[in-house]
Amino acid sequence: NAGVTQTPKFQVLKTGQSMTLQCAQDMNHEYMSWYRQDPGMGLRLIHYSVGAGITDQGEVPNGYNVSRSTTEDFPLRLLSAAPSQTSVYFCASSTTSAKDYEQYFGPGTRLTVT
Amino acid sequence: GIQVEQSPPDLILQEGANSTLRCNFSDSVNNLQWFHQNPWGQLINLFYIPSGTKQNGRLSATTVATERYSLLYISSSQTTDSGVYFCAVEPDNNNDMRFGAGTRLTVKP
Image (cartoon, rainbow over all chains, first blue to last red; front, top):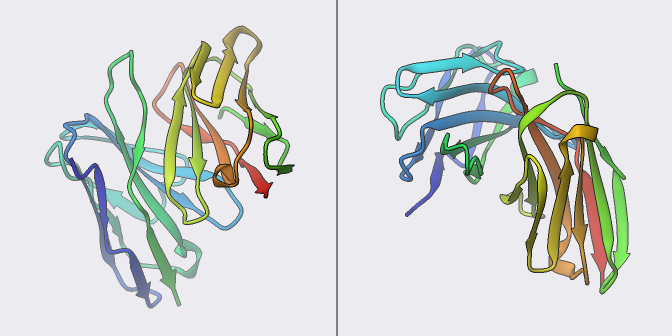
């Protein structure tokens, strides 16, 4: 299994540009989520999904869109990039089994908005 | 929303020492996990422990859900244990997972 994969690893955007961060998992996990991590801080939840066709907002959803058309993929779209969105973005997945909610994280995407 | 507080914020140990990291949370949870973020940024799940005690090698964790705290024990620390340890919780009433600010552990040889 590849686990959770994210692309790209690094990205530089100019203010106002849009882009999509890709996330895929091959573990057949129902739950997928996106976090951002700012320097010296913990992770903050942006959006999550408990299954294909279902998404919901987390703690910091503004400026981001998501969709979940398949179990495997959960892309994160930045609509109009702003310098405040400079961060490291992590995608995660887990089962929703009551016995095992362990989350598995991708390697992260480091985004800089100038 | 639920508040998650971790202590201490920073910890420096000599190799071979033991340590205890604490996570306090402000509401009932159905999911609590401990993670280690290594110096290269990779996040690894250590424990899924909404209640009770678990052990994995030199690491163990205990969650007392009724008192709203969890402890992570690291015994005989090694330099490879360095990094940031995060506690994350999910409240009973939603899937909104919240992370603490982390404990930065440095183990010196």
